[in-house]
Length: 130
Image 1 (cartoon, helix red, strand yellow):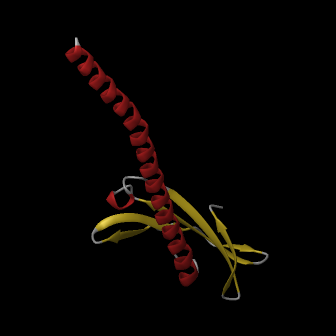
Image 2 (cartoon, rainbow, N blue to C red):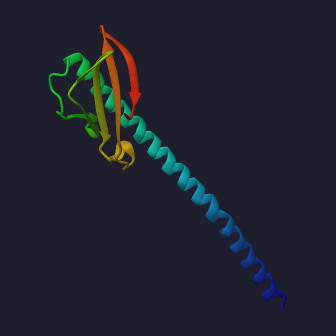
Image 3 (cartoon, helix red, strand yellow):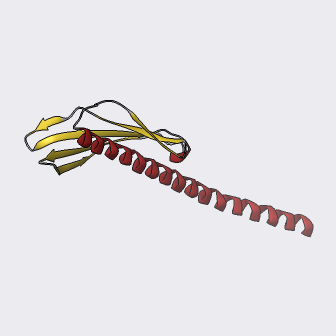
């Protein structure tokens, strides 16, 4: 009977450890997913900013044309800028970027927008995800 009791205690201990490991694994997975999403958001924001600065440099000459970005031959994403808009405080440029969902963004595909209002050659206003 002692041998059966020892096996039962071992089985219970293994089940308790497995029950404790499952939430830890789940929390780790959720943390990794949050990291991947945040990284993709930062990449999409970077691409959108590239669109705004390209629009300012080109004075809005090529709106809605997508420009691809790759790193070491792997696609990071693409960006574009929309047609410039005249506002009371200057010219508003909107850039849009999106990640490709490839290995550099850990499979997360995400888009982001930024807008800059330029007056007299200086950025006077900046908007995130307008």
